[in-house]
Length: 252
Image (cartoon, rainbow, N blue to C red; front, side, top):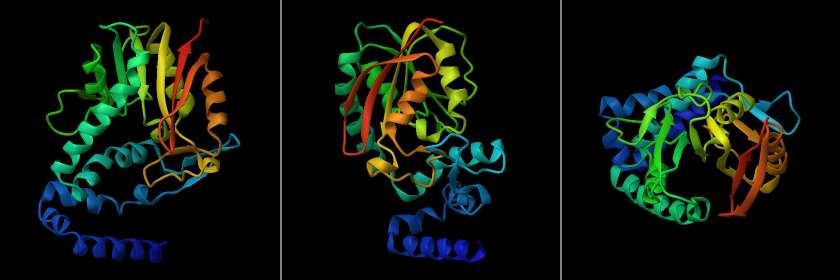
């Protein structure tokens, strides 16, 4: 393990030297700390086979390690990229997501909760379509008008109060059953669960260093979601790596 950490450290040093903006960033305390944080034990955990065949979970020592690791992603990201890149991403993903969402937004004024929303790009896309939308994330970043602090394993909102839940971060959950139960709890009767999901390992898509939950076959995950009293009503391929899938909450 010590050798692996030394290899990662040297690799990061080389990356920093080759990227001038990264060299500048490491002199700022609020940006260098996420880099140093990445060498804590939870940042170097790996995905392990879960109790359910076909799925993997990251082997954090405890839930606090999971929260710290996932919460550090935005800070670590800001070390490697400047605000101009982030602004370009915010515009491009907002536009492309808005176009994908149009067929699924039947009326204005519906309430939408976006899980794992980071800087709030998806929230903005829903607002563009006339929705009342808010995001939830372990680290919304500073002065975020669109996303509030929260954990999608323990959502702070009341039962049956949301028309739609959206996420493109389901591979960042730690306890999928618990998250699905929370999504179902806050949705109104026949509410929609709209989710962007990677194809999985057998679909040729490998997880990254922050994915805490992953699957071999996407169809297996879809079946798991259906087992939590959701009905699959729409599925479309949106990229070489992901599908957009709509579920409806079914009656108890």
